[in-house]
Length: 170
Image (cartoon, rainbow, N blue to C red; front, top):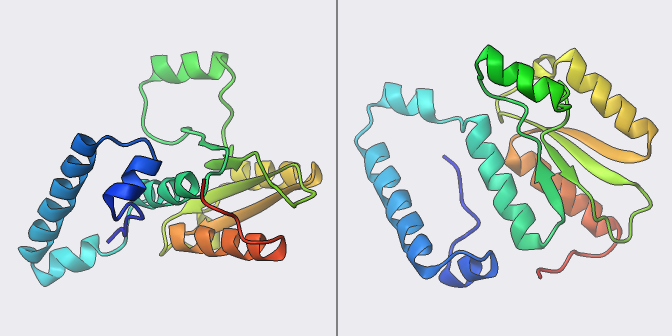
């Protein structure tokens, strides 16, 4: 199950979330906990590994709370052929990493790229187009990582921060 880093009204306020939105988030989390209590062991086993979407949300919350300048590249997902063709014409490229981080105080690299997979993923889950992007970015002095779950990505970012002083919350 996904742990959220927005655990208080103060955290929500730092991220620009209104009191009403925060109350709604608390209600949704409570409803999810109640739904999990009603699940059978078989259902729990099936749902125990967070989806890539849930992992992305967790990582996004962490990056926002820590004040990184970053973005998620929404290349994944199912689209109809017409939408896919439009996106291709606009320059969408297959394999671009899920997360791009642009401000790297204390680092001599040009950026950080993270390809996020589910926590139960394996290296063979990384597509050739994704490997190519990571290799190309590394050759341009970017730090790259294939992270298996948000926790893996967060721990790696903490290690990087530890090399150059702990990142402060904004």
